[in-house]
Each structure stands twice: as structure tokens, then as C-alpha cells.
Amino acid sequence: MVKALICGGSGYAGGELLRILSHHPHVSIEGVTSERSAGKSVAALFPHLRKYSHLLYEPLIPETLAAKGDVFFMALPHGTSQQAVDFFYRQGKWVIDLSADYRLRDAGTYERWYGVRHEHTSTLGQAVYGLPEVYRESLKGTRLIANPGCYPTGALLGLVPLSRAGFLRHSSIFIDAKSGTSGAGRKGDISVSFCEINEGFKAYSVGTHRHTPEIEQELSVLSGVKVVVDFTPHLLPLDRGILSTIYVHPMADVSPESISALYRDAYEKEPFVRVLEYGVLPNIKNVRGTNFCDIGLKFNERTHSLIVITAIDNLVKGASGQAVHNMNLALGFPETTALENSAVFP
Ligand SMILES: NC(=O)c1ccc[n+]([C@@H]2O[C@H](COP(=O)([O-])OP(=O)(O)OC[C@H]3O[C@@H](n4cnc5c(N)ncnc54)[C@H](OP(=O)(O)O)[C@@H]3O)[C@@H](O)[C@H]2O)c1
Image (cartoon, rainbow, N blue to C red; front, side):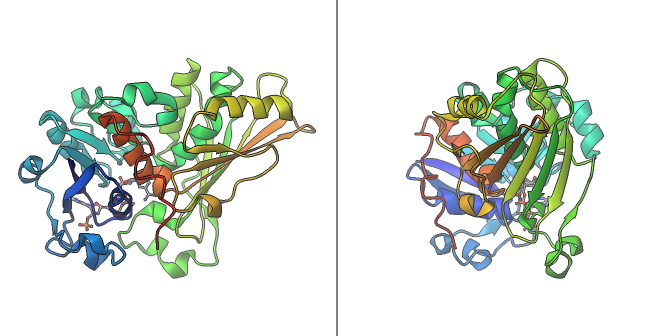
């Protein structure tokens, strides 16, 4: 058995890690952290996780926690995660960071977009970006994984096949994404309280959302040139799910048949990406609680636009499911372990 700890185990991503890992035959949870709920049991916060009634939250003190485990899932806010990640990594542990602290390869870009200084740049250089569909081979055996952001996961999976084929322009890529409110975390904040969100629908952080440089970084690496995107997130009055509608003008003549074949070939061996029949469009509902990314395709012959629509569950494929997938790859477990039944949740 591998011993795992979840730092930030009282949040939405941490709660989903606990739920998913409760099905993992090779992992035992040895510790969970929370500052505000220290001393309470996991089941007191998450009644559906009765299996963890014995497990009590404790404060995040890396020096105390290190001896308890082999794998550390970091489900903390960005900026808070940095130092603890560095500590556990230097102690020889496996670390999977769900925050943004190790996703951007350039510390200056991180500092510009997040307004936080990166104090651990040598460790930053060791992190592998945890999108298994792109970095599977590098993830095998690695000890430090930067789990992708939720919006970047949906956007990148919709664009990777085009980029790999050389069909993606370097600009004029429009990503119009809508997320359920769990994307904002479990902490109380008036802007995501029920009455503010219910019956409403709005865009936010237009042109300034912090996931923009992450999407651009990965598309630029794949394309070999600097790629820029227009990314507009929206807040849906739903608890979970992200639907991304992406508009591009491919750099080649494409047809419904050729574009379908491109996406099918790109993902045919992927356990968690489902390319739908041409013209069938994804729905957040169909991926809820699962680690799947569903992709729908439509070519508008009148405007020559290709519209790619992806649906993920932000808390699973966009966070904790992907983190468990990454752990499976890093530690050599079968990739889909604990994720096959991830649709079963309250
Ligand atoms: N929600 C998503 O859809 C999603 C998707 C992908 C990635 N992520 C990323 O995953 C991370 C966790 O997200 P979340 O949605 O689970 O957030 P959350 O619900 O707000 O939970 C945050 C967790 O971090 C702990 N924490 C907060 N401040 C802390 C501090 N100063 N020291 C120690 N622990 C602290 C909280 O503990 P307390 O009990 O003490 O508050 C809680 O356990 C974030 O970096 C987020 O950007 C989230």
C-alpha cells in the first residue's frame, strides 16, 4: 500500500480526492489537513465519506506530516502550496500539486499573472505538467506533477489534435468556457453565494483570467511558436462541470470526415477522452462525477469555422480525477485504477 496525504482535504478538490481514492486498492489515506477544521473528522465535513470517520483533520505542518506518507496531494490555494510542495519534494516524496504554483514554467509569467513571487524556481524546473494525453511518458516515474487547471484541461484537450496536425493558427483562437461554481472553491465568498449565482449567468475576468497563460504556454510548446488565445470564462448556476466552446479557423482545408478522423486518431487509445460522433454535442450532465472529457465537433462550411466543444467535470477531470490518473502513471499502477467507477457519488 502507498501512503497518501491530502493537504487541503477540507476543500472541494480535497473532498473529491478522498472520494476517488476510497476506491483505490493500492492507496491508504494517512492524513488530511485543514486549518479551520483541525480536530474534526472527515465524515463531519463530508457525511458521504463515512469510510473516513476515523480520520481527523490536522494543520498543515510539513515537518510533522512528511514522515506519515509517500504521496502528497496538494489541494491548497496558489501561493500557499509553493513552499510545502518544495519541502515534500526535497524529502523525496511524490508530490501532485493541484494549485497553479508549478504549472507555469516561467517564474516571471507566474508572478505577473498571479501577483505572487515564486520562491522555489529550481523545484519549479522539475515539475511535469500533468496532462496525461500529452505528457504520459514524462509522467511515468516522475516525483513532481503540476496538475493542470480546470479550464486549461477542457480547452487544451479540444485543441491538441489541431495543434499536433499543424492546423492551429497562432491567434484568432476563441475559447468561450462556462463553469459550475465549485470551480471557485468551498471557502465562503459572497460573489459565489446561492442568491448571487442562482438564476443568473455572466462572464468574468474577460481577457485577464489566470488560466490564459497556462493554455497559451501549452499550445506554444506543442506548436513551437508563441500562441495567444482569447479566453472568456462564465459562471453557470450549477455546482459542477465545464463546457468549453472553441472557435478556430484551421490552417488547412478540412471536412467533417477529415476533422472527425483527426480527433478519433488522436484519442483512440485514451481511456478518458470520448470523441463523439460528428455533430453530436457534449453535455456537462454526461460527464458529471466522471474523469471523462467528451468532445463534439462541427464545421461551419459557411464561415469556415471549426467549432470544438468539450465537456468535463471541473472537480474530476479538471482536478482530482486527473490527479489520481497522474499518480497512477507516476507510480506505475494501471492508469484507470479508482477512476472507472468515479460516476458513483452522492
Ligand atoms: N475547484 C476546482 O474546480 C479546481 C479545479 C482545479 C484546480 N483547483 C485548484 O485546487 C486547489 C484547491 O481548490 P479547491 O476548489 O478545493 O479550494 P477550496 O475548496 O477553497 O479548499 C482549499 C483548501 O485549502 C486549505 N487552505 C486554505 N488556505 C490555507 C492556508 N493558508 N494554509 C493551509 N491550508 C489552507 C483549506 O482549508 P481550511 O479548511 O482551513 O479552509 C481547504 O482545505 C486550488 O489551488 C484551486 O485553484 C480547483
